[in-house]
Amino acid sequence: MKFLYQKLHAFKKHELFFKIGFIFAWTSLGIARAIVLIFPFARVAPYLGVSVACCDTQPLVITKLSELQLKRARQISRLVVNTARYCPWHANCFAQAIVARVLLGMFGLPYRLYFGLRRENTSLKAHAWVCCNQLFITGDNGFKHHSVVGCYCCSQCDFATKVSA
Image 1: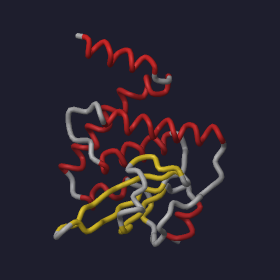
Image 2: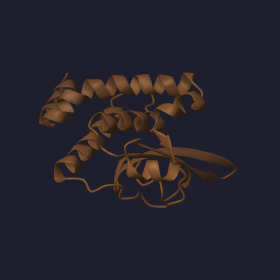
Image 3: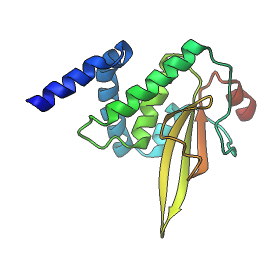
Image 4: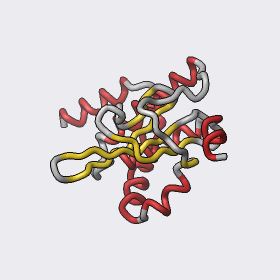
């Protein structure tokens, strides 16, 4: 019982955005995890954004964001990453990236969703992460240990229209 009290007390300390968004993020992580398990990537990819050629090793500054937009991006980051800890299922990096992409899109913030690979012994490990300008939303700095193999960005981004056109 003390454990539950501690969790509720910690939840009360969070900002209002987190409290309101927790249930949405939690259910969205479950839906995203199911999508990742059920559907092949080719069926999911069109909903991730515009596929762009990407050879950079650092997140690009797509547009100048206001302080309010940066604050919202940080809130979304904390919401998705912290909510993933409380899921009874494995909310992996891909599911977190999908939810972060949806939330950033809902708030009209530019994003880039990266997919990367790295060699580990005799196998390859995949990773997905999301950036909003130079802020890492989910997946930490995937550029450190992974080679970028794919990138999707929001359709309203200037970068998407320049590269895909």
